[in-house]
Length: 128
Image 1: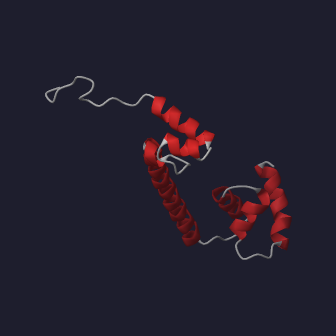
Image 2: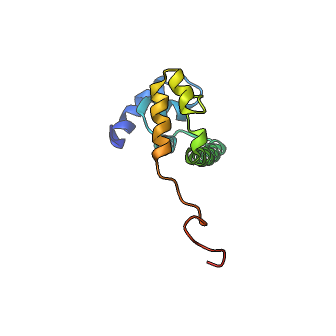
Image 3: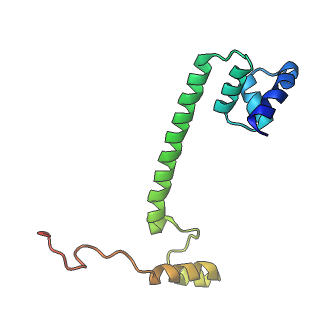
């Protein structure tokens, strides 16, 4: 629904709205973000507490920072192959004896995959 149609529909919706938080209700009813809801409700003459909008902005920024930290932590653990295992076997023999061929295949693929060479293995010296 476009903004003009939403604004026309919202006039009747506001008359029957009985909830506590008109911004959240508008967001859920019309499927828009809280910023869009705040703008459109202001256009309709609804008074919205500026402290509420500031708090929503702060909360959203904190949530974005939290997600960014989680993403970085997840990326750090993905790079560590020892932590990126779904099985508990330490050796291929243990996986074979347990008849867990999927784990055995995964171990063999990890063993065959090329690893990043160390600086010393590449023939570099400390002066480079």
